[in-house]
Amino acid sequence: MAVLITGGAGYIGSHTCVELLDAGFEVVILDNFINSKPEAIERIREITGKEVKTYTADLLNMEKVNQVFEENDIESVIHFAGLKAVGESVYYPLRYYHNNITGTLVLCEVMKAHNVKRLVFSSSATVYGMPDRVPISEDFPTAALNPYGRTKLMIEEILKDLYNSDQEWSIALLRYFNPIGAHKSGLIGEDPNGIPNNLMPYITQVAIGKLRELNVFGNQYSTKDGTGVRDYIHVVDLAKGHLRALEKVSTSSGVEAYNLGTGKGYSVLEMVSAFEKASREKIPYQIVEPRPGDAAICYSNPLKAREQLGWVAEKDIDQMCEDSWRWQKSNPNGYKNMQKDNLHLLKNGDFFMKK
Ligand code: NAD
Ligand code: WQD
Image 1 (cartoon, rainbow, N blue to C red):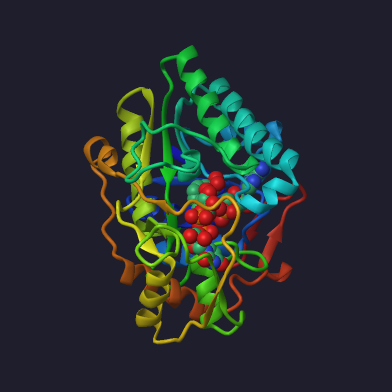
Image 2: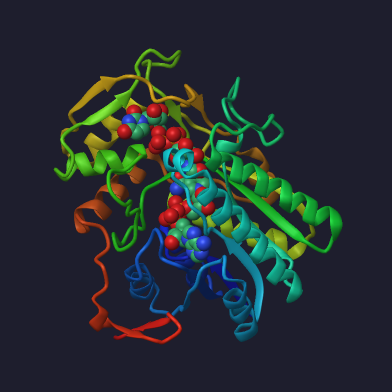
């Protein structure tokens, strides 16, 4: 019996694969590498000592997704695959709706055809829009501020309808807050394309000298120091949350949303200080205009996940910064593009790593 991980080569997916393999699960990855590199799979093998069967496949290709289910004994799915850049989603809404929503529809159709009805879905704290108070609980009103956020909200609704139509489904909607950090080995981590949109990869690229200084988006918010406050969560804690959610969907049916956060808020300037302490590097910054659409404060109430999944985030902000820095220092240019020489490419687009 295996767990299918869509988007398993990506940032959160790769860390989750490591935790699953370490816990003895059999894992099958499906990824089209639109925002990741095959080398991440090789690194997962290096960390765990285990091979991972990987399909280079697009979720939009139903025939191919079906083949994955035909060839493997899949019992549940963790669905990470999706596009996630907020700004880009405003310019290319159709691409985002098609990839994220149609991709999920194809996945669910194929799951249904194979009678696989256990699903853990990557949702996001973005579904809370501009929260008017904190900490945020799962029963807060939802809203979307951009096409990316709308795809997450729409998918949540689709999955609720799916459960309402057939109560054999068991679905966990995991609403992540702000994942940062990396595996302690420094072998896997976040590898953004181009200039990072998110705070932590931006800071680490300033520290390594790839970017000159951090732009702090506004310092006039009603927060402790005027800069935006967020709930940063270590990606390994987040990955562990998926194992707890998998247990949950394997032992009960239903559709439930869970916040995965620490319940603590840190400002941008606090993050800069914490990173400087962890890395002993100076992070020059300038205050610039606020970024449109940014909330002042956003942090979770993570009680439901504690009570119903038995999960709490354990790693603190210092560990998050240390691990982000170790990854960046060991991989100044992120993952390498795998040389064709290192791959056995098959006609259908699949590949195997050469040892
Ligand atoms: P990521 O981009 O690193 O990983 C996503 C993976 O999905 C990539 O490997 C990409 O190649 C793959 N993919 C995308 N579209 C695909 C398709 N059509 N077919 C096959 N593979 C496809 O992103 P991540 O940070 O690991 O995020 C994983 C999930 O969590 C996403 O759904 C994202 O929206 C959600 N999420 C992320 C964050 C965050 O801050 N990183 C926060 C909340 C929610
Ligand atoms: C954090 C704080 C910025 C960059 C985004 C998505 C959200 C979710 C997580 C997927 C804010 C400030 C940032 C910079 C800055 N992703 N900042 N300078 O916006 O909370 O959430 O990622 O679901 O949907 O919107 O994260 O890391 O971009 O910003 O001052 O260069 O850092 O204003 O206060 P955000 P972030």
